[in-house]
Amino acid sequence: KYKDVEAVVKIEEVDGEELVKKFAEEMEEMLGRKMKSVKRLAEAAEDADLYHEYNETLEFEYFNSMLINKVDEDGNPLSLGGEFALEKNEHFNKLPVNTQLSNIQVPTNVYNRDTDIVNGAYMSEALNDVFIDNFQKDPTLTWQYFGSATGFFRLYPGIQWIPDENGVVTFDCRNRNWYIQAATSPKDVVIVVDVSGSMKGLRLTIAKHTINTILDTLGENDFVNIIAYSDYVRYVEPCFKGTLHFKLLVDELHVKGEGKVKIAMKESFKILNEVAALGQGSLCNQAIMLITDGAMEDFQDVFEEFNWPERRVRVFTYLIGREMTFADNVKWIACNNKGYYTHVSTLADVQENVMEYLHVLSRPMVINHDHDIIWTEAYMDSVLFNTQAQSLLLMTSVAMPVFSKKEETLSHGILLGVVGTDVALRELMRLAPRYKLGVHGYGYLITNNGYILSHPDLRPLYKEGKTLKPKPNYNSVDLAEVEWEDTEEKLRTAMVKGETGTLSLDVRTSVDKGTRVMFLKNDYFYTVINETPFSLGIVLTRGYGEYIFIGNVSVEEGLHDLLAPDLTIASEWTYCETDIDPPTVS
Image 1 (cartoon, rainbow, N blue to C red):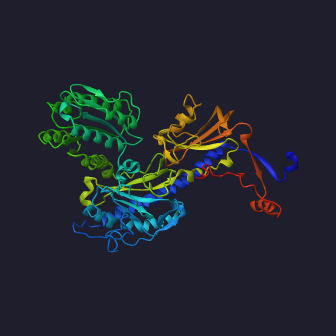
Image 2 (cartoon, rainbow, N blue to C red):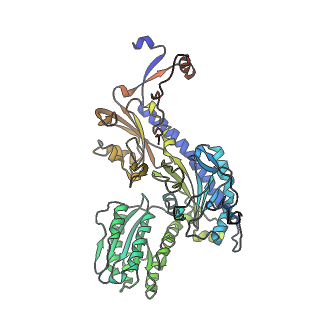
């Protein structure tokens, strides 16, 4: 039969090693373009700051994305609002956007006309041209942004920001993973919380909120543990099970006894020294976060014994409650251990005060001008557009810190903020189209932590009533959880190390929507995507999965046959599905 059609169709063997290399190179090129765009933004922001003279009395009407196109009772545009043209745009999740201008979102708890905000908004106007230029150079770019250390978020293209049902915008760019990862290096953190009798009531509530806020600032590359102390020391969770689990346990903390900070500090230094000696942990920053109302006995010699003179571990202190009697002790600990002291007297103070530690940890990077580009793990952009055409697409962000280059502040190491852009993982996976991978073949992407960015068996959503929602922990699913036949984790280990290679596994797969099982022998081909923390794998099935039909008929000729008047196409049939993630009909 093959002989009859040999002139028109040929069967070719699929070369997995060649394919994975080719796809990875194309991905590297695509992601490289995104990195270039972000570098241009970082340079433009640093230059704009360098030539901007801070002005205490500056008045500047910037476009606030909450206030644009709105009027007061008399029909006059709101201050910081005004007319801002918006047009629906297919490329930006069908949202109404303005591709000629960016605009600024300020969280509800930050004053719109704060001097720092106004100066920052004025200075960062310079980014508009770069945003547009980047988008023209690379039309596959999506959102580009600058998150400022003062709290405002400049987003291109400009959008109308819709508050939640209470009229509040809780989105603070400084809490986002891309911001925190770019602003600090990986860190080992021990959170030490005082649960002695004096910490009861509101103090304990504030302390718990402080712990949870610190946990929110930790990313995939950070290591953490929590110690609660009173008369004795205990680990909140001796066997770590992830941040969400920690938060549940923090909630159960209760107070009793008197606070013996010395033993808790000893224990903290001990575990940090152990991981450093064994070459485990983040191998970067180490910090202790001490949360207390300040009542403490003799504590100074602990630091002499474990942390001086190198002061390798920074100690940050949070004085909880309105009582200032012991402020000097708490301040002394932070100042003598390269840390930062903050006084948290109400729940509203927590957010701003916790963010301060990030600035301290970013100083060495700023002073050395380490412009490290970071890539985040997969996440869903549900916060940004929670009210409009909620986009439940898996994304990764590429971001880069922006530092002050002013002579007078160079030694202080001032972080101005973070610039970044998003990449939809679906767009990236289009470069490894399924139809080139034969029957049962597929491609997948993982991070250097072994977490999945994209995989046909990653099902991040669940249905609640009629709406789709992300599952908790959807972005920390490990490769070992879906490629579970890789029992010795050979595949996972090689990919996490960024190696190139191949491996065969006997696998079971379900077909016909899970009603039948097939036993297959799969060949896995994998390689690293250079300049990124990602690795790409492709899977080919032995047997007919190793071959592909190639026709030497042009598309035009092929389609020409379908133009006969008595011929119709059955619309339900998929002739050639090139999209790994076909659009679902809602």
